[in-house]
Length: 430
Picture 1 (cartoon, helix red, strand yellow):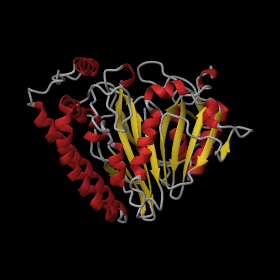
Picture 2: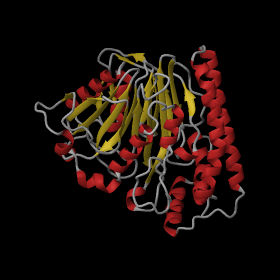
Picture 3: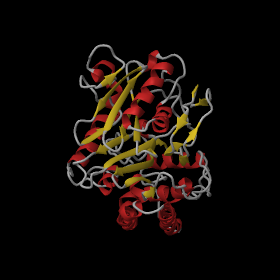
Picture 4: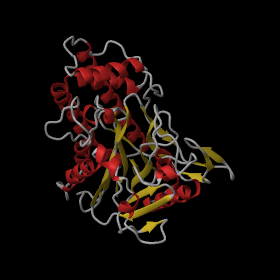
């Protein structure tokens, strides 16, 4: 379950394009935060994606990406030219027709970022390989989940929605200044590019409404769109942060029936074994490119930190996997996140007050840093990551000594006990 949205001028006051995405994966599916430099390849070189080998491009562009640790591709990312992509799982009538492994949704996000200087080039790169190799294969860390993909792709001046069903696809250039997608096909007769020879209603022809109704996709898409549209003309990076942290009135992570909120928290129900494992907001404009990544789970309990193309990422410790690692940024944050969930209604607002103040400092300084030299950008990135790490550890220390933290809902308690045990996390609230 994921959500992506975009705002373009004149919806933004500074003539920038802002794209946001919440990456929702399985509870212990740690999100790795990586920078992959651009490079020229040897002619004829091939690359192994999640399940298949495909020809490599002669040149790939630098990307900064959040990826489930076990995947080749990613959930969120931005490249050196300011192309940013968010992807979604979509459920179609054609997905079962593909009998062989092919590309999967995370593969195609990375392909678009590495091969597209513009949003349209990214659309064409993904579509071309989709037609040739198809899509198919397991998309889940534990289990056997198959689905097709949709993508929100933006650059310096425009945004595109690309939706796929089997080997077919349709793409639409965003005509308004605000757009959003979720786990549901949204293009109808109004596509601009497609593999189809005849103009049909794309969503009605290929969408699977039975699955969509079970997972709250239409409600989430509406929530993200309305959250942006309410601020048209004044949408900022902070607005995007707020949308990614939307829970809705009366939200309780232990008892919510389905995911209709943008900030997704796992729950004990069968269809809620997912959570926001990371999030991104990109801002691309006349002054340059900046990406804001949590690099940690739970949007409402994380701090967005800035990164810049061409600037190395700070040391964030060991590359994560599904086992707790005290040397990994993602897992260190889980020591705070999972304790805070035991008293969510009190601790989330308290943590948020501290973290909001830190983010406000970062946002205030970022515009001047964006115009500075590489040395200043690198120092700023290092400072922000270390400051966020310090604040997180302060909350870990506070919560470690709390003997009163416990999950009052028995099913919710059992869920966290199960996943903490699987990850090797000890001394957590019960």
